[in-house]
Image 1 (spheres, rainbow, N blue to C red):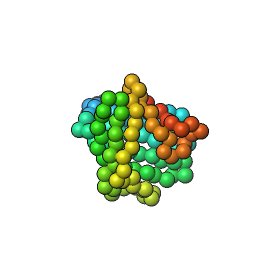
Image 2 (image 1 turned 90 degrees about the vertical axis):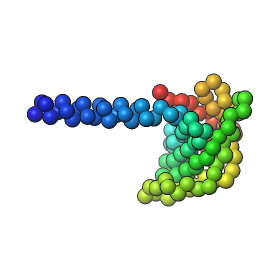
Image 3 (image 1 turned 135 degrees about the vertical axis):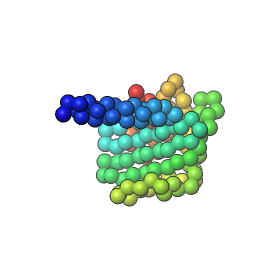
Length: 128
């Protein structure tokens, strides 16, 4: 019994470790002060990204594309709708437009496109 538990525990640790190592090719940033929603970007080393925005009433916006860095600006180019993202909820696909994020250290500052705060800008930070 104890041997079986040890094997299961070791297998779980190895699986989690593999997932952690595989995720090192990306950086995830989340919008600060986001209590009733989730707004995040996943930036990959191959200059692609994914954007997820989920509201408290379970509306989902999802977009993918490529990005370029120019000095202190990161320009996001949303491509064609990526319908491979599937869920039982309705998804609004973000496509065919550009968005700019200003870099400030490891943070990004953006216009508040979804009107999530009283301020005109929001801050995205990396979580460890």
